[in-house]
Length: 380
Length: 86
Ligand code: HEM
Ligand code: HEM
Ligand code: SF4
Ligand code: SF4
Image (cartoon, rainbow over the protein chains, first blue to last red):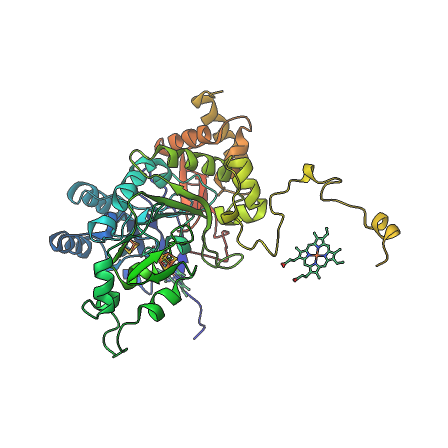
């Protein structure tokens, strides 16, 4: 056994006119294993929030048994439905079936916009501050050219979560995380608060009930765990100092019948998450604390134009947006590229670097100095 | 300044023919050197048109996409090694 792989990665496989959506995989021992000489994968753009009818899925499986290996992956990390294993001559027929019989399109792969993904949002979740599906669909349709014809330095991902619980893990996995939030106050139903305290409503919507945790203690389980310490009981009333609330969702998750997000909703935009390959895993960093996300999302798309123009121009080959921000500096990106005011929330660790927004021309002598000259005046 | 697309297509093909001799597969960023004055989006439009005309083709590893003249990268023996394949 030599323990070497016989799979070859990559190739000129695709459907006509598309630069993404098909991932070529070949065996380098086709004579020995003729049935898997080719084993290409198709990424198929999933419907927003991944809602299907069973009839659709059965039909898709029949098609894939016929055109490919019958092996699927629901869903890949990007979000797409993954059809694993077919040969080059089956690619166009599969694409024809997908587009004509299923009304589906290929997703993204390679140096392009990857299939945008969203949580189930308002369709099933009462926490949602955004119509995540509408946003996901609109971005997918608006940026078709970016999705199918790769001309980016590397991959690019949009992910949309309806609230800070962030069920699609946008903050960990996307170059542009769109996360629902509110800027008014958490809605409180004091009667329901009392019902939780009195044990009439199960906390956490009944989760963790496989063990007896004792009676619900609002002080211990909610108020003391609020990360900004902004909740307190005033007699029988639960009070929240909303100016201090960081939208962590903890109190709402524990007492969903009593607490709900506000009504003046929009999104927080973060940039730059990526998986470990180069400098290690990185989460998205805050860029826009609040933006209204209403059709046709013009303010958001203006921001996207500035972001992409910069990354396409300055990004090195195979450099993600998050890496470019790191290389050229967050302050440069926020101030010079996006033209936004720096705010305290942009600074992750003010105490380890209190001066992130100084520019070279504002500092006498700039960033460079002559060490010999300095040492002439200061002992080492 | 909107460059004439036909002119841009020709510049890209000429550039690719020259570069192809020692490196058949190139990044989009390389294509941009075909005309330093053209906007990136114009180069993309011209390159996409060349793909439609079957003069240029995409090569993809799954994570990264490269451009080559039609047929050029098939002749090349595997020279695209990367630390990350997907
Ligand atoms: C030691 C061998 C391999 C390693 C370490 C490896 C590793 C990976 C990793 C880390 C991913 C990304 C997963 C994700 O983000 O969803 C991936 C995706 C993928 N791999 Fe592999 N892989 C290997 C072999 C193969 C083979 C043998 C094939 C096909 C014959 C293959 C086809 C794919 C495809 C098509 C994807 C994309 C799937 C998707 O879009 O979710 N890989 N691989
Ligand atoms: C331009 C001059 C100075 C700058 C920019 C500066 C900056 C700082 C910064 C950023 C801290 C950390 C604060 C914190 O995280 O709590 C600090 C702490 C401190 N500095 Fe300075 N400093 C300066 C001059 C001085 C001088 C001249 C002294 C003493 C003669 C001094 C003594 C200290 C001490 C003792 C601390 C620790 C205080 C604490 O943590 O409680 N600093 N300084
Ligand atoms: S991210 Fe928020 S809105 Fe979306 S499904 Fe999860 S909890 Fe609901
Ligand atoms: S959402 Fe989080 S920060 Fe805001 S009040 Fe509730 S527990 Fe505190």
